[in-house]
Length: 350
Image 1: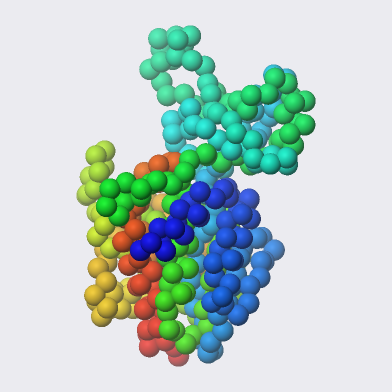
Image 2: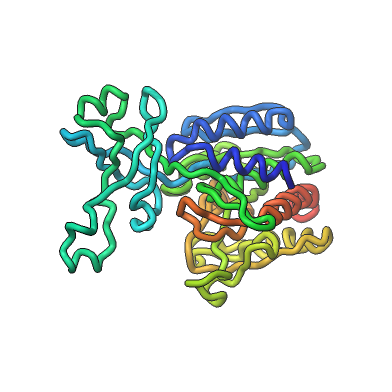
């Protein structure tokens, strides 16, 4: 699994908040180029690569963006106020080091707030909200900041690098959803499917499933798979009854998410994925969740409807800079996607 680890490390360390995914997409294009016949970028920024095959077409998709921040205001002393891009838990942001993606190049900064030493007792009992935080890049004036090419709208991402834990466990930022990207890329390399395969590295999932909607409409495939991450219930602070999947126990096949407001996978899709897993001795977990959703929600409602499945990797502490997963889960997710692509026509071809 050294190839998976190396690729995940490179993608995790890359920076690409929603709407500013270019550096991540460049890496994906370089990785999949030898395995596809054509690559294009659509009007919203999705990277779409096609491996030509027969008339049956399958879209395998993973979103490329990560949650981040964006400069909102620069005060006269050179401190940056920001907006959140995507779903942050404010306490996660405090005292993080960040990269401000200025026109002059990366500028390092830190997220600060009022020190606890000068807080009133009642303030110390409450979490600090993001509106009371700021980014300090070391400048002493607004002009000094602007001279670096930092303006309202400049992207900010968390400065955190990939690291190995024990066994096959690793930690880093943006595993949501660079893990899904790795699974899709690996599946493309492994599959012997004769169908036409469209690989989509989608943009702006974290802010409304936008890229997937546009790409699915343009491609209108016969079938789709979205690869993403999901929350396991195997660590302190959460119960298995609330998230009954575990890290290290194999990829997760989504039956329903968002209490059914997102995707409710069709019985045919579920049979296709679970029977393929059984045939090739790939362990899988089934998930029906009342939490968030994935790009599959947008994809399966496109045009007249597209049969869509979700294969997820159980990942701890998502939407933080210290996400944790098992490399084996990514490997098995890639294997399931690769084999499912080969068996798809038997289930869906008219």
